[in-house]
Image (cartoon, rainbow, N blue to C red; front, side, top):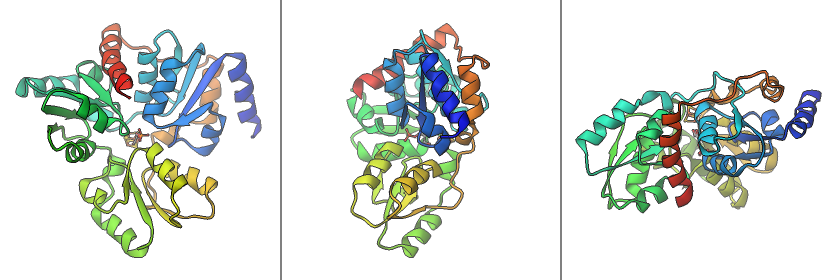
Length: 301
Ligand code: 13P
Ligand code: SF4
């Protein structure tokens, strides 16, 4: 621990703050967190947190979800600039237009979305809960927003549903091509390829395992395979490189980095604890509508 990290840890105790970090955060940020997890785990931890203050080291939708699920708490996003380009691809009007076109359908909204979009959806999901959420709904037609790649993956897992896709994506995961995946398969034929479902369907075809960041970490920790290809953001590779130095590890493509996730600096975390940053505030109508969708997701688990 360096001096700054020690200062943060001391202050978080004094302020009764809980620091939560996503697996894509830099290792120095993960190291000062009370818990590190995927979007689903972070949402659940935020919901049941007893602390006065929550500091969500991740991107805006994660901090917003924490505030929505536990509105009495003071919730901080250390870098106000840390957004998610996929979340910015859809507006509430897009969901309302789809509802009009498919009145029988239920709207499942990936948590990588704004509070306003969650508020006009029926239920949220994360990558680790998407299949379970879709299966749980009585409707045959499902409008899945905003990630077309996750939606297409889920539609293959639950073929009895008609899944209507919105044309959004994560530019980082969608940037991986089948050519990249084939190149890594040809170069490391013995390796297990572990891929996040935000990748394109033609990339998922090369995968030995498809899952959330937590799912990929879990698979990597348990497998006997000597070589692993990590098909998600660099943060997961960094965790595994430190933890499993004996494994042959590589990412599916060089520079697989979400620049928004890397915006959190230790100085920003300290500033939150010192009360020098503005906490998350959401309009009441968005808070209550989005809470319904998020709480349904957590209940289904
Ligand atoms: P996970 O829920 O799998 O952690 O994914 C979050 C995310 O933003 C992936 O790009
Ligand atoms: Fe958004 Fe993609 Fe970054 Fe995840 S990796 S936060 S989906 S831009």
